[in-house]
Length: 421
Image 1 (cartoon, helix red, strand yellow):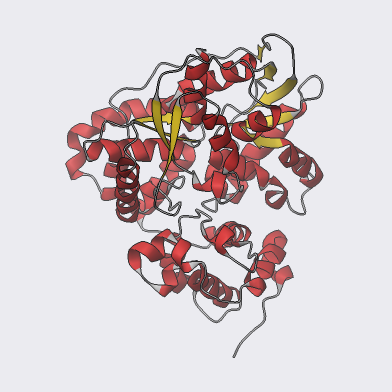
Image 2: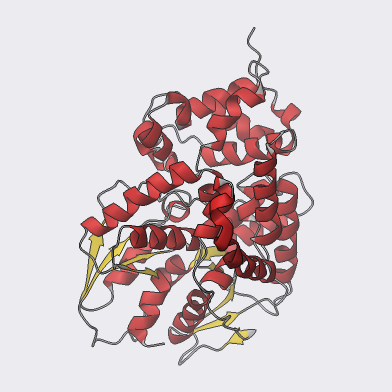
């Protein structure tokens, strides 16, 4: 017997799930855009298949445990979203569904341990730095560890870079053209602190005053996207308060991490039916990726004397697919004199990082990582740039494994280099 989904029965996100499910016409345009379908070739490992599974679980026609392996294998890359002619809000459905079922799940012990490590370390830079430092010692015995923990250790760099402190306010150079607040993030501040330094220096060089709210923290998206809704909301609330305390108006809230930007744009959904909903929606409306902001503002004063560069650009999924940002980073890179921009011939397929995916689904993530590294190498570029720390780490690891000497950089790092700041 078929049952119709009762959106009210499924809490604040019930309408989001119902709307997405009902708008899917199962046309199959999403299949070619789906990384797991590309790798596994299984209908239930496609967006169309997963929508069918989630629908039947919500209607009570299928046990959650039967559907869960296929839902877990979804990267949440949103590659299916721009491919869908019906405009299915797959991201809203997936995030909402994962939030609903997470508290009801019974996980194997190793999965529970891995997830607990993710929850308690990644959103907190000091904890993550301490855990990463301790993890290097674990490499001595890593062959005896389970796959997930061994994967985590293999992703750690040989040594962590020193932290780069950023003052609460970075003044604009020359004529002041704008004033922004900046989300410094969590994992990125530990693994690649130079990215944030390059961001504020680049903004300053373009006449932008940068304010750094001092009580900010992780935006919560890394937890929201794996179904840890309550913890994500607590982190997001902290940032809503921290950014609300800025003295005076700002033109935008800047992020340089695609995953963070995507997550913050979802704050309205995260706080649906909550007292903070309007505040969250106003916050989300001001969030802009650094490349979008600078493309709209226009670069000024970029030095003409630049070396010849051949650069490939990798589209981070949560920038290109989730936020629809593809032209701005290319426009900024193309503004650098003597730079040849190369495109990857892989249809924008996910690199396999996808937040915590390469920790929870290491085999699929590794296969996608190898495919992405090969696509980058095929361009003949000496440098590849991107706009997300997860992609950065994944691509760097897999290029190194294949013996490629291609340099991996964030978009702002290359731009800051061109400016000499």
